[in-house]
Amino acid sequence: MKIALIGYGKMGHEIERIARSRGHEIVCIIDVDNQQDFASEAFRSADVAIEFTNPQAAYGNYLRAFDAGVKVVSGSTGWLKDHADDVRRLCAEEGKTLFWASNFSLGVSIFTAVNRYLARIMNQFPEYDVAMEETHHVHKLDAPSGTAITLAEDIVSRLDRKSRWVKGTHQAPDGTVTGSAQCAPDELPVSSVRRDEVPGIHTIRYDSAADSITLVHDAKNRSGFALGAVLAAEYTAGHAGLLTMEDLFPFLK
Image (cartoon, rainbow, N blue to C red; front, side, top):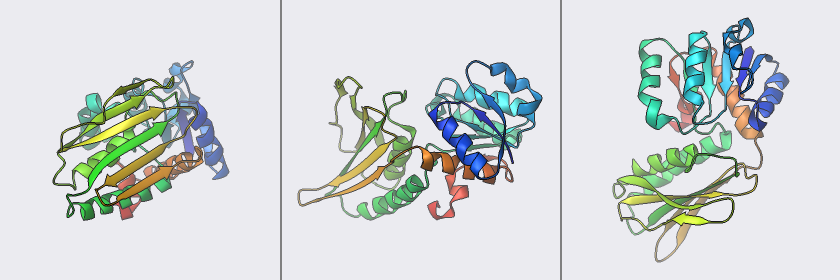
């Protein structure tokens, strides 16, 4: 399979390594200094482009790839609020293909399935309140993380006593803490920590007067995310439309 990379930071390099190890060809690498290559023959020859950039650039990258007739796999977060409806329309009505996930890790997919199952159980036990914290490296721009938002929305949709998630505390790289974990009874607080080079830690805690139950996913490095992105690209090459991890891993349905 021919793959183009959009974004060539640490994740892009790891995706390149894993893609090559699985026998794929990297035909084009686009970063901030060669945006003109979206119009190149090399980019247009790609079966799939894998995009990991930032919230400000992601949507524009999708449009450039779609204009070139290239399917996209993306793990960029933070763009949904402003552009989700347009992306859905492009995929549903104009034949474009985007496989998007807030997190491509196999471990996170399993964690997501467990989170959904536990929330359904906890809907029967209102004595347990729930809160979430996510920790990421200091370079991550959006907070809460896209993965935390996805996990929180899964909980809210399954707990009758919760109507929405809200931002909790935010610990900046310098240790400064803003915000508050205090919220209304029908709200789920999601707190964020930015420190060091942490790939990603997501913690969900159900707490009662009697005991607590905690789920934790702790990524050790970027390889799990990169492998998942390449698996998604392999799947996307033969499918069309707006695709998600539920398409790749049916156990999430």
